[in-house]
Length: 201
Picture 1: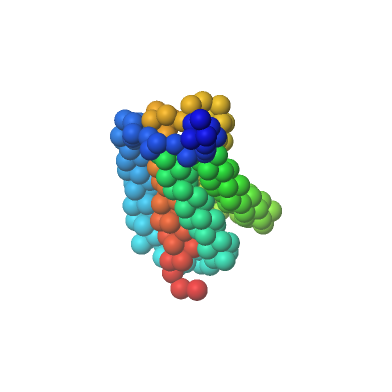
Picture 2: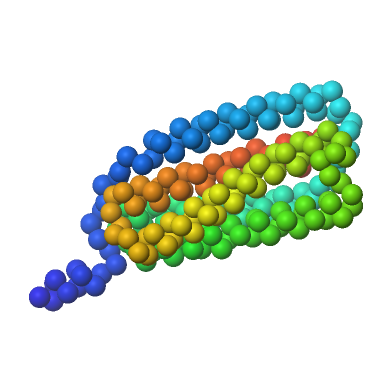
């Protein structure tokens, strides 16, 4: 009886067999990355024709804020990895905890980006200022929309793990959400040096 009570009260459970949720989200991620790659190629092509303008405009961006945002997303991504491991181990509370920590850390990225946008707009810098800022707002804006989608996914998964049985289907959803969040991280790792670091400083 004591063994049964301990098994019922323990957070740990038998490892959950992986579901078939992941391949579908991978198709979406690959298609999305192709679209961003086209934007990257367009940016580099325009930059080669207007190198001085692009370098001068890039120098107005705050590299420290870009580095800070990179650290935020990478740290948040690590927490999502821990949530996936917990989900496949059947540990509900640990899964919810790491999803929440990832969400809270990730929220810092949204705050800093909004501050950066507002500072630029107050200076009269918009996507119509020049071609560099057109790409700046297009790339970071598209990335920000993906970031919002990822934050919504993390919140929904947090609620689902708290209310539904943590079976293979739900663990697969957590893993799919993590893959999407890693895509958000990866996109920023490309966007950050492209916009903030290229050209002389």
